[in-house]
Length: 125
Image (cartoon, rainbow, N blue to C red; front, top):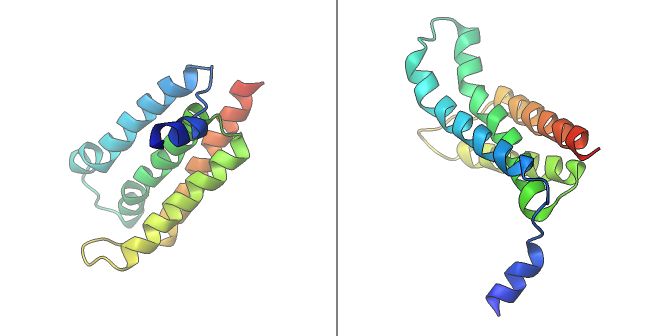
């Protein structure tokens, strides 16, 4: 029963490029969370902001490609879902002691989701 309900929601996109892009940007996203921050010494406020927001940029791109691949979502829908997921994540961080949320993260989430949606639009044509 669960399997039938789940399989009705899944509509894998025929374009395997979206799966490849999802994997690539997921790896970049994970590296930007840990390795990039450890490798670069942030001595300026601007660099600190950029290093803190870059994971949101790659998360937005990754979510858009994933949604496009796994449920064949249209670019605008994938953008909206991706952005909402990341905004919810930022709101949750407001209530966590060891995390911080700021407007730069929201801007990076918006830019990542919108740039991912733009690439989807281009690849779908």
